[in-house]
Length: 213
Image (cartoon, rainbow, N blue to C red):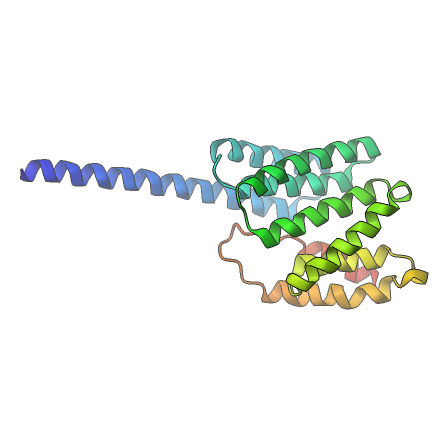
């Protein structure tokens, strides 16, 4: 009887250890890729990181964050592509993975903001032809600010939106600056539950603040 109980205990510990190791591997792979994403500066690097997130998402099928980061990375890639068609293709992939992340009941706040970033990026893919997208994105941001006024990524998107809005319509660098400054402050204040939670946008905030000087 004692031997049987011992075998059961050993088996239980082995299973628990395997699960812990799998969790640790997932977190390590994600953290390493996210850290590299924060330092990426060219299209080739972003593509390589998107592939890594995609690979993780295929293994960790029940997790929303790998798909979220695939979507985010492809959204950023759209800004590095030169041709509108290439930008649109990147955004199509971004939207597809976003939909999958949303279907897995990910963080509603961060998903809503990423969706807005995709819409904003869609405008920048062809600004003169997509003014309606710009206006719709502005409205979307206003609605989200009522729910998440202190999310730094949303403050950043508002700043970008105002920066590129014509001055005669109430936009421009001077109008954008307070929102970008608020984003910078909120990035300092933000408290992520884990090191894998969305925290992107700091360097982009710095970039736009410098353009507002």
